[in-house]
Length: 94
Image (tube, rainbow, N blue to C red):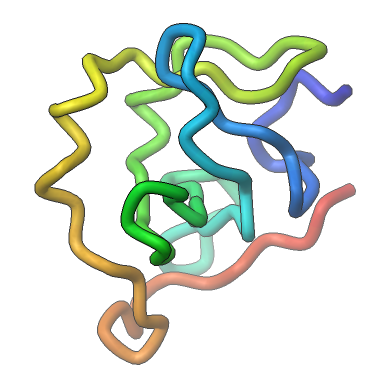
């Protein structure tokens, strides 16, 4: 598995601690940058996609993406709708 955010593939598992909270749907940059700023995650408990800032990524390992947590800290994330974020663009995995 890639250790680079920009190369994450859709379907990569996302964890908070030992809890599998969802999977990656895409990685996004701001403006003309190629630097990952957000991860689009399908959040299982909400049955919805959310944008998680990349600062929340603790590590990427063989099981997937580990977020810093705690789990409750992600309750306030808004559902992702690409029309609501016109300044971001999806990065294709390398």
